[in-house]
Image (tube, rainbow, N blue to C red; front, side, top):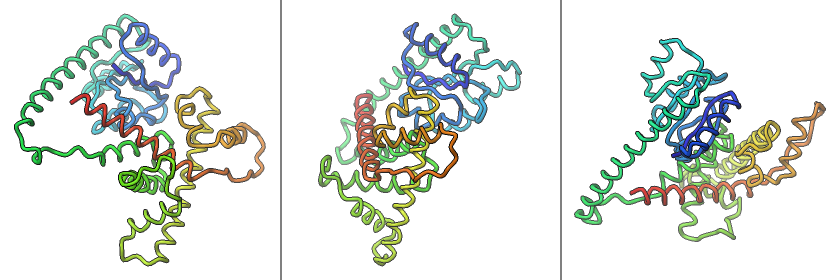
Length: 318
């Protein structure tokens, strides 16, 4: 069983993690200190079964977050809060939470609730397995050409979206360009694997620009779009660098910082940016030097890895 904890109090997150691990209830797949850091695609890729969420958080509270997750997260939700107003508790239940637990946390109550929710998840999973087995028996009697083909297009989009969120650039204009490049590279590799010989940046940007503008586009238009795309992606990469430098400055052991910073960036660049953020010197500094090709290459490899894991996991569950 996989849990995700969203609470702005680090001590509470630590207590909840300890309860889950000590009582062998499952594993904590991730944490967030505010509801604005909780996204459906993140929970999906972390395969979260149960979300533990605080009601009162500074940017996006628990109620708003549950509304935000309505169409993108189907797991169970347990809300934890000091709030005792019946109206707010009632609203939380109306949005589909399983339980509302009042702070301060009572260890025995928390263990009892989490066990009940876990049992419910396991029961629903068992029912799902039975339904899948029946579905497979039916499909065996269908002609092969009548069965739906398992394509990876959707998983490419989902893995790319997940990574953009992890990299802190989901809202950047360059995110659209990176998604287009990702789709192009996935399709390109089907014909010619390039683990060691990735296409040149010029080839990537040109082909993606041609796809976007269409066959009727002039060379001048393609050149303009190529240059504009390069600039948008560079700005997005710099924004991601700032994102990780900020995470590292706040908490050097942050899981996202540890997992992604050294993969996507040369660490001396990240370290320099962290020093700039910690410095009181307000003088202008030189623009950060980022390796666009490395970033795109790692973005593709990470998305490919996630896509394959997602697809293999889905096949094992069928």
